Image (cartoon, rainbow, N blue to C red):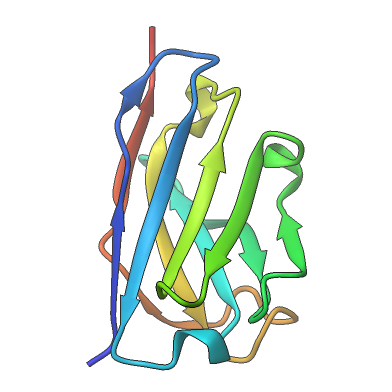
Length: 122
């Protein structure tokens, strides 16, 4: 059974940092490109960042470029998202997802976790 379990969400002040983790199991993690997606209250999901199987190619949505860093540890079957310079607009449920067809199709994911809540507020 494929499982993706996120952790690391919290409430932080503007300008703060968080590191999210996503523990994967039930499939060969190193064979799949992976994605972080977020959904803010009242809005649809939007992709945040993506990474290829080996971790050498990363992609970011414009609104997080220069602030967030995606990475993965295939030996630990874990995906990460380092988030710096957080602002209130980053408040959302963040979840990781497995890309079905690879990085060229970032809206096509077949499994995702329940998410971890990030709240940025003073």
